[in-house]
Length: 278
Ligand SMILES: Nc1ncnc2c1ncn2[C@@H]1O[C@H](COP(=O)(O)OP(=O)(O)O)[C@@H](O)[C@H]1O
Ligand SMILES: [Mg+2]
Image (cartoon, rainbow, N blue to C red; front, side):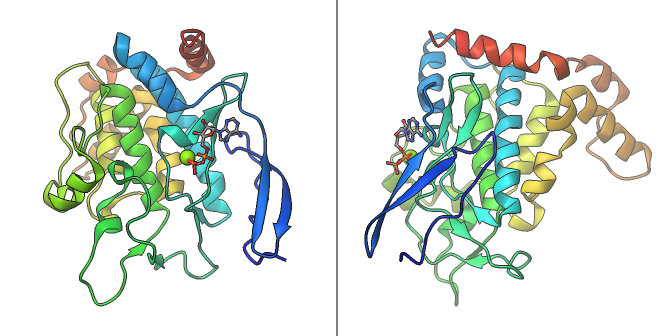
């Protein structure tokens, strides 16, 4: 019996594991739900030729991805390799997280302190946070599901701007050699295309260099920007500022100006994305 049999996962935004076939004592094969709609990497390539994804469609995808991450976090799973090639679409256009080849299970009680990262060097560097690159300390770095929040932030940025926030024109080896993640501590946004200040603030939260300052999956998945769109996020920020906190300086003016939360339009937006695939 394999001791590392994968847990069965059932969620609309996670590729379902239908069966596990034992090949021999050390090997098993998995039978996965078929996703016929291609992957996000392909979708982004197609879009790049014509521009980037509009914010409302990109946000709609992030809502789906974070719903999957939230489920995984509830099962104490850190995906560790979240990137566009590992996000598939079914025939209805529902995004599904796949490829648990590098995933880690956090045991009960370890959730607060995080787990030691013992497999450094694995993964896809453009999508990994600074803590995944830490070396030279007395013990391996500790990671938590905040690692997946960072990766999701990188994906959102890439959807909006058509380029990655860190190491866009670099190879993985270059990124390591030039210590990109150790040097660049603040994400920069291109002037174009126009993206709401609330989306940028959400990305800044996801890409907080310090793990302590970064929301975990639960907090990011329930972020006012994801739940209600730019207008809701602006209102939440204004309420925080109004309550005497320093807030992020959002004003009523910004809240009104950014009023294009998508709510009911969400599935419509995604439909557009998918139609344009064909
Ligand atoms: N359930 C699936 N349905 C359709 N295509 C899939 C499915 N699982 C994987 N693929 C395709 O195969 C590619 C590689 O699979 P993945 O599980 O990511 O393995 P790895 O990246 O470790 O080789 C995916 O990017 C996707 O294009
Ligand atoms: Mg993969």
